[in-house]
Length: 325
Ligand code: NAD
View 1 (cartoon, helix red, strand yellow):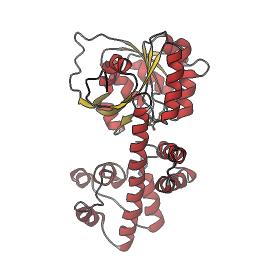
View 2 (cartoon, rainbow, N blue to C red):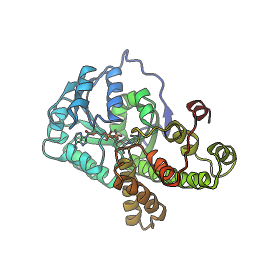
View 3 (tube, helix red, strand yellow):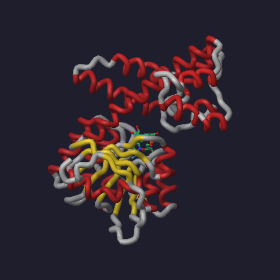
View 4 (tube, rainbow, N blue to C red):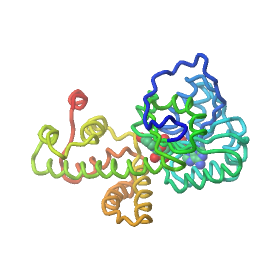
């Protein structure tokens, strides 16, 4: 990619603040992911102005040294760079371009880093609008988990104009240690939606297959031992499920309502492009059933629990075994 040295991936280790230019940064959306990401920007030595609809989430960041703002517009007015980490496309659109949105406060030259999982069209529409106002948008949705948000080791999928990306790199480096330059505006979000429809439908497929095996009388350990050596092995099975569902934990994590949103956005995009989203629709139906049962705010691990309860089986490991797998 021009201006970024032609590389698509780098790992970042150096987080020393000495000699680095500190920026006035804003952060909107202090949830499971946003709160630790915002904390890591503070730890990077930057000043931070924050907004969230949830006053408790704001208070926790204020206690860590951030300044509370009354609106996204106020965050924009206090910042050179504003990060958004919100649930759905309409929240992002409203917070940036809506009444009292970031765009009303941010000065010319200001940059928004949009890190939520949203569709590439919404990302491009917001970016086009900001560029007409002399501002810019870099899309940088994130891969991995809330644990990686805490340790600042997220995978960043970056899209946008090279100059704008270069300007926000010190802030991105506070949150992630692996950066992939995916292309122009919206391409980071295109990468993330593509990733998530696959990762989520694999997780749904795992729950169905494991429930089948358990009901037939196989143990979880047996299925792990065999499948580790077959084409069925995948990192949802090897890494994600042992840390959550297999130890009986469905605290969010990655909430079912957010997984459903990602798959829904992918299905809509596939339909527009001319792909029939057969697998996406099947995954979405499983997620929607969990939402209808009242589990939208629980981790996706709940999908396995639902099948376990229905069939009278259990996919559990002792934490030590789960760690080793
Ligand atoms: P979350 O629901 O825990 O947090 C969202 C936060 O945004 C909440 O604090 C909420 O109060 C706030 N909020 C909602 N609407 C708002 C508005 N209009 N203005 C200001 N604040 C508002 O979600 P999360 O798990 O932190 O995920 C955030 C985004 O990151 C989502 O798009 C999600 O798909 C994506 N994501 C999540 C994970 C994960 O593992 N949780 C991983 C990668 C990407």
